[in-house]
Length: 151
Image (cartoon, rainbow, N blue to C red; front, side, top):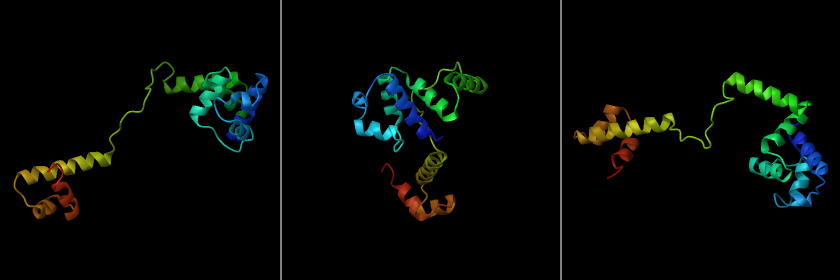
């Protein structure tokens, strides 16, 4: 079973089990979108999944657990047990996790900052742009662009 079909089947099963119509979920998405989700012709965003889970009286994790169980043909308990084992093996079961992504400086940005600093240093020493090009083995266009940064 595809994950999209498992999601569709789980959403429909939970909605019917709770005695709700697709229209009852309109505060989360319009009825046509709920219909497409249940027909497995579209996929939800994480935010929509969370909203639908809450509307169905579940946490987002519970909804996704049921989807995973349906996808794998297992019970929710077995899927949760496997998840616990995976998280223990990774050593993150009791670890506090970041709520937002960290700002990561890429190697390219680090190299660019180093080039800029090298150009500034040589400029301060009195070298010409042509001399800086030769010294740092950089293209003339790069040195010319960096030469005028913060001027």
